[in-house]
Length: 190
Length: 190
DNA sequence: ACTGCTGTTAGTACCAGATACTAAAAAAGG
DNA sequence: CCTTTTTTAGTATCTGGTACTAACAGCAGT
Image 1 (cartoon, rainbow over the protein chains, first blue to last red):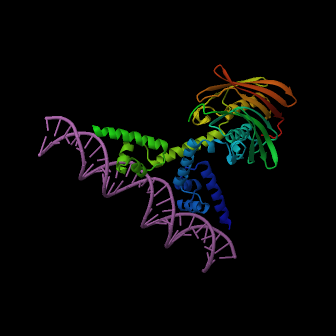
Image 2: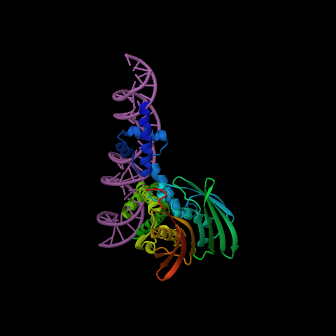
């Protein structure tokens, strides 16, 4: 029973190592954790972690998609719902990289970025640009908070759309913003 | 001599195929170009193109770096001047990673981030937080533009500071923002 | 027609980093 | 001491290659 604690620790370390650097071979992992390659393979199997090549393949594929897909990945956060010219919903998990050094308070520009990209995504046009915005941060967001942003399209005047975005953490509303999103009628072609 | 033209064409096609999709195996490339695998290998050797795994490895590494840089690189730009509670100046070189893929127009949130972090930097306090902002993007910034942001501290009411930020590219003013920066008297210690 | 050269294909041996599986050794616990 | 868990060792096999050798196709020049 005592050993299973070592095992759990090793699994935790393994996950952390791969999180930090997914490009480690089993051999390097083994050296790092001071166990045999066999053990690493066994642990990976138990944890359902794919082999190096598969990990590389996935990262490469993701990178590839990111380079040409635009809409999906350029939205900061994960797009959960989209009804063009009406509303949109996105989810952003905050990590410690997004926070102020030691306070754990998330930088405002991450919240802004999620809101701004969502506001742009919800407007259906060949090309969109943020023209202006008025934003208010009602409460600080902390590392680990799950930010749910909801965009609603308001009035439209010519090529200008007013999009309201409200961001919540649980029940608490932490951010309200109003974006003027300008639709440029494919001024610059693809 | 006539065949060397075919060869050149094939090399061109090979390069284009790999540009479009770097995740093709030699076998797939061979099928695509209707030659043998040997020929593909030979061509790759001649053109100095790495094998699939190496290509994946490079992409994965790049993706890894980019993920890190996007999140960790505190987008501030370079602080050129700082006179606490008075004014500050920062410089941000825009790269293609900061732009909307096909147009070369820089995402608004990068411009916002530079301005916002500068506004926070100029306020002298143990801890600062952006409370609200009103921003206007007057002209698009393009990849390669050097953004110069200038922050000026305005009125102060209690722990709230009004900071104006103006961003220029050369002579052209592309951004104006007014930030409410809240100084928290070290509510959360380091 | 013979020779020389370029370009292409085929085939073999080998490698890294794995999987999948079997077996055995080591470490506790009872 | 015996049982069970955990770890290690070893073998066969796979993929997507490298590196190298050999053969063949086709045309050019003499």
